Length: 502
Image (spheres, rainbow, N blue to C red):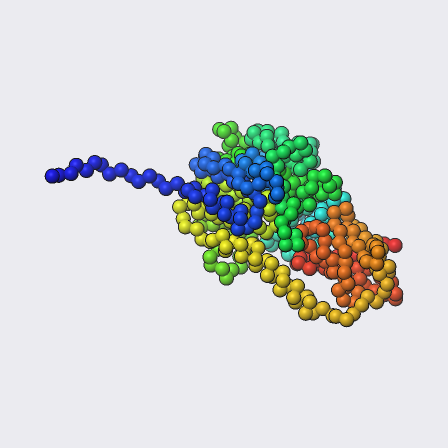
């Protein structure tokens, strides 16, 4: 008997997101992250928008696709996009000197003051020390931070490399205001958020008052996961911090709104068929304007870029042989695109500061959408993002302990170290004596209890930034303390000298 065989049928295409939900749930547990939201775009469509986990540890509120998260430094791309709109209107140029629009702009070098241009700010190639502590203090506004630019020292020659800098993005926001004649917040809302229909996106945490579906950022402190105090909306000092850095890192959004923003860029400036930016503007923003030297890493299981640098607002790198346009945020956010592949993604997590889940998911999603095998395991990411930094910190502390001069004591009574010290860049630093110990106060947000380390040096763990520790080296002369040198133990840039002001 002959069997009749019908025409061959093509196999069903494999779903690239099969098992993705289970993978995310496992990642939350492995990396100890309370919650995350994800949106994925492919070929002009949102193929996934979903939330996982909880908005706040120990509470029942679940994360969904409408949950609002901080996007932190992803805000910089929105500021750059607003600048691009003014460029297209002919109100300024990428090559305009900053001082043309902001006469009070001043750097340490008169030549730089005259020559730094808008594209330098947005591509991070001015190469100044970061000086983020000025904003962390919580009592300086944007104008005061911009005024302190003149005291920031170079870390590399001008335009020699990518050198990330928040105060210069705050400066870009100030130029935007000066040119448009309206506040950064209003320009953002009327020129960008409203045309894109981003009704769940906000300029800063103050605008979240009364909203319930909001994620709380978390961090590890003393070995346990806690709500990050820096995002406490009832603390005026932290609110002032977010107000001050707003154009560089205070926005809030959800994955649905962020998907609209990414889709506009994937469509080369068009949104729902209406042009918002010109294609040539988008291509200029996606071009490499500054670069980072790539150092080979001895971990072949993770994907390291062969190029990395700054576009205008965006950051550029390669991944699995494709060009990636992206920006991350320290609160646990990343927005990324592979324009040639028409893939976009946004990951918003409520644990940042090195947890790494946003980048782990970014790599996994791109691999899935490209049909490529994963290049790393969850454990690889856990080692890279969390275990290795902890080991490095422990090794650094062991070196400090080994070099410590023991059996020494302060050369003066504690009351002699107490006083107000100041420097041009950061302002006042108060050392107080209370109940037989010293207390450090650096603006309303930064506090610590200095403990004697050796001779006239004390060590203090601070309330913020997270995990920050300082050595306070008091300079003793003729029975008094005329100055204080601060060393940030885990930070690579030196601090200026603080002089006693009394």
